[in-house]
Amino acid sequence: MSVEFGTFEDLLKAVQGLPAMPLAVIDADEQHVLEGVCEAAEAGYVDPILIGDETIIRSILKTIPSTKSFRIVHAPVEEEVAEKGVKLFEKGEVKALMKGHIHTDEFLHPILAHHLQGKQRIAQVFLADLKTYPKLLYITDAAINISPDLSTKMNIVQNAVDIARLLGVEEPKVAALSAVEVVNPAIPSTIDAACLAKMAERGQIKGAIVDGPLAFDNAISAESATVKGINSPVSGDVDILMVPDLVSGNILGKDLEYLAGAQMAGFVVGTKVPIILTSRSDPPRARPISCAAAALVSHRMA
Image (cartoon, rainbow, N blue to C red; front, top):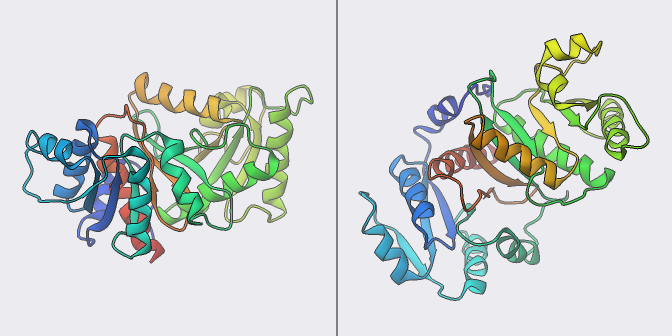
């Protein structure tokens, strides 16, 4: 049985000894991207193919201590890099794709155009490792779906639940967040949150316990929920934070990273292939952690 991870260190230990996952790095000609990829390759998590301007990539690699040699696919025109990565996947040469320094929309466009989307709408998930929380925290969606409707939110939750289960959470607890913990028709996200909770009860969302609306404090803190008189199976033990929209999710994720010292990893979920999606400004450490998690997901999917 898969074991739930308390920290990224637990996750990294679980990846040790698995075969390195063949990975296409889209738009790799940037220092932070290559530092993270080299670290992941040295650790044995991935076997990367670097796509981008070959001259720039080779120049940067000279500044990074590494025992590995890498295959490079020359793509000096930005519009070509993601397309070439998708083609490598279609040929069976890689098992996952990773966003380098390219913009998210340019990265995702050929992925969707080549029908690598699964049955559900795709979404993004942050994994956060916080010293102040006893287990990994999943945050969704902070990068793809801007103002999701209820149907899209259902898919976002199901995607996050599926990835959490692959990473060892037997029955994820999901908090559908809003500004308050009661249904208020003036705040549409409270209505969506209540509907998501009922949809989980009725089996429209599978494999998880969903409660909402919950404000952030009473999702994270059982004490806060008790003070407010909230009886919730999710409060204080939440695995997945479902945010109302992209803006709030993006702010929450970056607040945790920059102010609370969280280590972050990022994925696209709901696709036929593991996709690593980190911010261009993320520190190098975010990329090897994301690579390790994607390698574990790929192994368990197989």
